Length: 282
Length: 285
Image: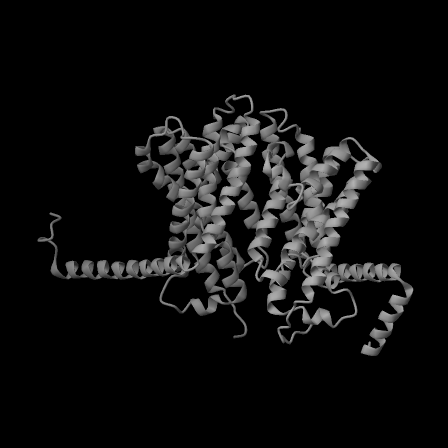
């Protein structure tokens, strides 16, 4: 396709309005998803080993909680089923985020190395294009583990399962936007790989233990800078006692984090300096 | 008579030569260990970052166990203070150890090993010596941080006698060695397998489950019996148990099992390395 054709497409997209843009980018995500999956399946044995290995890896923690709950009935107000819910949701959301947006965690290096040049030349949104162009194979194991764990603990009740899938998507997007924000800060303050690791460890660690064990300042933290509260704890409350109002608030909060991450990236991109790096992006 | 006077001259010279050769070899690896230590000291900030995560995990676990022990009961024979100090020791060992798995894996898969084979050292011994400096410095920094954190948040451990450290420290070193050579053996499977990371995950999780997070006494009786014959509890549970509830019987059992598993993993690593190098086929340059 020539550059002229691409410019024409972009003009056409603008004419068709924001919905056309959304559809076009959803198509982009779908194409990347298919392409990345096909690439991963090229080495089927390795793919399956990584997926099952990660699922087994996560499953080990069920044993830990089973043994702990054989000694006590509740921990911070959570029973075994509640802990399994937050584990299932955290795993599925993490898997969802890293299957679709595999460049999370790599962005800092890409910015520092000047590897965004190739994306800047393409007629799609840079943010989505960068994030989606890679997948993390082991994330399939996290995703599968989350879904299977939920079904094993709560059974298949269509309405409740749909709600869990809905939470998986929104919590995954929220998780991705938090990791992405930490990476994006590289545009402003230089190498943030340490900060990125810190945010990841904090977010995942806070999301897999009962909310009741965190007190004082940590409770503020899990509902602000490291929003594990909105990723697993609030969804659990809605799941146990459904409320449209709370669901609405959750969606609004998730969208606010996502919008912030996106706008920060757009702002940061203006500060990006090309690395004059010659790379082939196929 | 076994005295030096009765030893034939040529035999004495041979022994001296052998001793000098051993001394040279040991000296070589000591230099490698020193270089490793110097290299790592140049990036000391990295250690403080790891120490920060160590303290963060301790913070989470202290919160978890405080909530679990809300009513001040004893669980599986452990008081809250013992449980917190148990976690401090097990986490200390895990965060201070160095995993040769990824290093060996990368060297073999990238083909870089071809450039290392003609060097005048044994690769396994080199890797281990190089890691010694790293392990030593991590252990010291993390121990200071962990013990300080434990004293501040859990108070001193009742009944702990500092004199017993003479027996506990060798067990901690034994735990690190067993873990190191078990991971080295797993890393060396890269000679045969394209993707062996799943082995690492499984080993890591078995270590986590059978000692790192929970003492073996928390398991049902049948699982305790199985766990205690496996190597995993001797990499974390063993030393931590001796810190919180020292017994001579426990000490002997743990040190014997560590010796046994260390021998097994050392021999296994050496065999895998020798066999792997013989069938190595590296293309390109």
